[in-house]
Amino acid sequence: MDQKVIDAARAAFPVGGAALTLGAILHEGECHPEPLAALPLAMANRHGLIAGATGTGKTKSLQLLAEQFSNAGVPVFLADLKGDLSGISAPGEMNAKVEQRAKDTGFAWKGAGCPVEYLSLTGARGAQLRATVSSFGPLLLAKVLGLNDTQTSVLTLVFKFCDDQKLPLIDFNDLRAVLQFLASDEGKAVLEQYGGMSKSTVGVLLREMVELEAQGAGAFLGEPEFELEDLLQIEDDGRGVVSVLALQDVQDKPALFSTFMMWMLAGLYHELPEVGDIDKPKLVFFFDEAHLLFDGASKAFLQQVEQVVRLIRSKGVGVYFVTQNPKDVPADILGQLGNRVQHALRAFTPDDEKALRAAARTFPKTPFYEVEAILTSLGIGEAFVTVLAPNGSPTPPFAVRMIPPAARMGPLADQELQTRLSASEQVKEYAVAIDRESAREMLAARMAGDAGGRGGDEREIAADENAAPPALPQDRAAQAGGMLEAAATLAGALFGSRLVRDMARTATREVARGAMGKLVGAPPRRRTTRRRTTSGAAAAGKLLKGLFG
Ligand SMILES: Nc1ncnc2c1ncn2[C@@H]1O[C@H](COP(=O)(O)OP(=O)(O)OP(=O)(O)O)[C@@H](O)[C@H]1O
Ligand SMILES: [Mg+2]
Image (cartoon, rainbow, N blue to C red):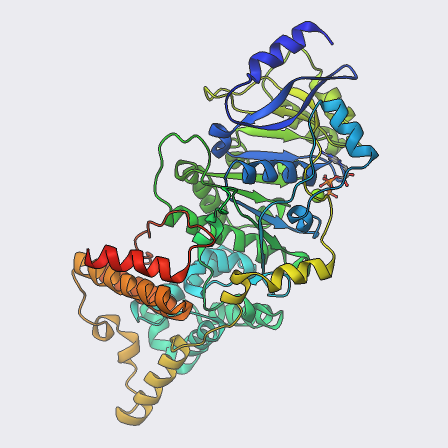
């Protein structure tokens, strides 16, 4: 291989610093095993893109990165759309192809599985993932319901009304009850008070919601809510736990699972502390089939995604979008993705060609490759790669033959998966839904009170000043919330009960919200990475010590 190419690659991928191996440099049909292209761990929170036509190796690239993050002690979240990532918990097996690829890339391959927790929106293929309606928020919910901008703003007002009225929106029953109330004659005064809410739009929301509910949304909206800290687990041997969100059973509801991932990301942003320069990320998040997140999204939604992606880097979280074409990702977001693994693009139609030219233009300059030509001629499991060097500047792009993943390339058999699920504490923790008093019951009670006692006086619900309890000063509210939470965590640790913790967490949120009277959540809970084997008793001991000295 041309010595100039090798020298440039050595400059771009210096040996020494902690980095994830990508593969061997390719140039003019030759593959050179030294130096190996690598992604510096310290730059891994500068986000990334894995793109390429179907079947070109995107998912395997995602897998080999995820495995190495886990090995380096970085927890990983990944969305498994086709079920072909579930095998990441089992060691891969040597075969002729793997052997050849290992030889080409000069990589000492060894089969190994990762520590994995499985999550699922239906509860069938992993721990049941749940969020409350209120923490989901109007923007994400609007995306799931496929609302337009006007309808979205009405939904936002509905949330505001519930917030003002201290009506906890936990599950779909709550939201339905509120919408039904607003669409009824009793709700008229509220609609007038919250200018901008029309009865017909509320009716549309109600219909959309009932439709989504009919598709089984009941399972994933409610309590116990998934605790995002569960994504930050570290195994006792120091490896990061890989959380695999199994999605084959909701493949036909792209708006749903893509927004759920956004909910997680926004929540992580909210809960994690700022970090300065890091030697490795706190968490890496892989967004497979990312175009589904952006398809038909409202402007407000896109702005929120853009903002979360931009800001979450400073919390040490790296986000990697995986999609067929870079143009699937809005330009504002694409511009923030520092690490790029571009697999082959096809150029069959004039549209393809346009997209190819656009993709080619986004790479840093290189004297060694004809970019458009290389992008269409890469083989399976090969990619055109540029990463951020340790000094933060993009390396020149190189064509790379990727190393083989260490774990199994393909799904677990159903029996293997079931064995793992039945051994998982996390699956047990989230198995049973809780239904406690929330907006539905409260509205029903208030309306019953109205009808009985005071001859249908609607003002109790309509005029929020009268209904709201006296506001606590903000610091006292926070204090009260903090104490509640501490007490509940203690109780939870002692009795292993998630319910107690959940109830108090919501109480915390409500107190904080009441104090500020706005659509804001509770202050971030500063939690650190927890060890998977931390026993309830040990945690309780620590807490007692912390509380009472
Ligand atoms: N790094 C690699 N090591 C070994 N084999 C690979 C690698 N990358 C790709 N392959 C081979 O190519 C096949 C397709 O790869 P993969 O499933 O990652 O493609 P994809 O781009 O995700 O496709 P789709 O768009 O259909 O999801 C794999 O099943 C595997 O045989
Ligand atoms: Mg794939």
